[in-house]
Image (cartoon, rainbow, N blue to C red; front, side, top):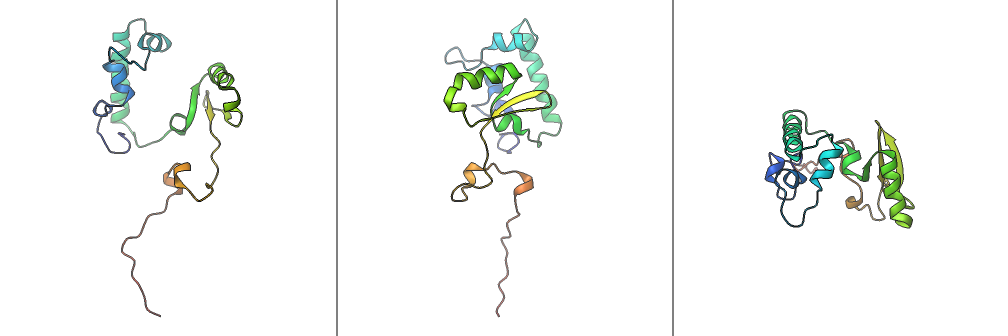
Length: 143
């Protein structure tokens, strides 16, 4: 939502995982902070939260307009073993999903057709390289 310009900081979006890490609720947690902290090399959750804040601040001070499709268009992202495990657990539901590797990360993705059945844009993510500026002040000419 920061890249979309809705908020200036991830903490302002109530549904962000930023808040789930920085201010975890007592009930209905979606992030296992202890496990995530350990996976990131931290033994203490508070140290991980501090590093996480610094990572987000560094990202906000840099070029955040860039979009990494691996994270926004994949069902799973991680090590080869992790993505293979998820694919196996999905069973037949992962039958037509694409398994790919780029820059040391593996992804499990839905295949994206060039057009939907009725040119439905909901199926095709908008990207700067496949959009056309809309002209709102078209002049009409008489023949």
